Amino acid sequence: MVAQVNSTLTVLFWHIGNRINKEILQNKRADYGKQIVATLSAQLENKYGRNFELGNLRRMLQFAGQFPDIQIVVPLARQLSWSHFTILIPLKSQEAKMFYAQRAIAQALGKRELRKQISLKTFERTAIANLQNTSKHPAIHNTFKDPYFLDFLGLQNTYLEKDLEQAMLRELEAFILELGKGFAFVERQKRMIIDGEDFHLDLLFYHRGLKRLVAI
Image 1 (cartoon, rainbow, N blue to C red):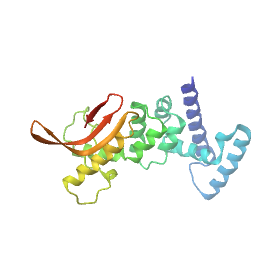
Image 2: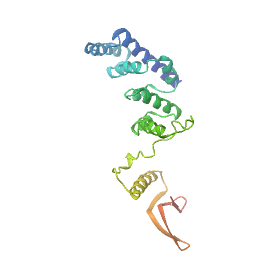
Image 3: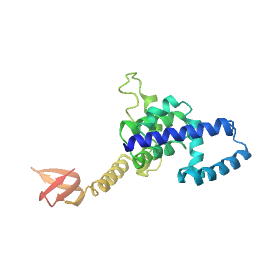
Image 4: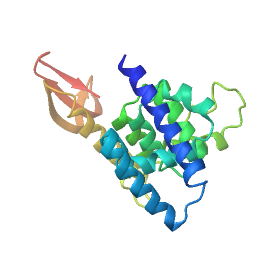
């Protein structure tokens, strides 16, 4: 029921934006148009509520302008909320908009997860991987990301293999420490002698519930 209401509301916003663009602004963005939109927003908000405040009304205009085909909007609106579309609207290319829209549907992404995908530049990384991929198989296309996109590690332009290892282990360590109750971090690169041979464990934990050491 909620999904149907969201879908209907999103399509309604598209029709409102499309009608204002064509019949009132006549697809122009002159300075006088800004005043018209502001005045119209005040009138609509007074009559129909906060959904028509100026910022949201402008998003409706952008929405209809950037997604001009209602035949594409309707199936998307059945699976994405208006909030999803407000996140997609600022993206520069139509390809990026559709990429993230389809990914949000396929992975059932909420608003927070969608923003994270965009901030991680998933579209750009996938595009790079597609260029490097020589296979034309559809199952492989849009699947792999650029394995060298490591900005989140904070490494400089030149780094050694050990620097990459330490940075990745640092991030992995921070992630595992957030797993929840029971894990107690013991040591990184823990040296252990087993059957007379030296071994170095990347990460060593003690789980209080299991009462045993856990090596990664």
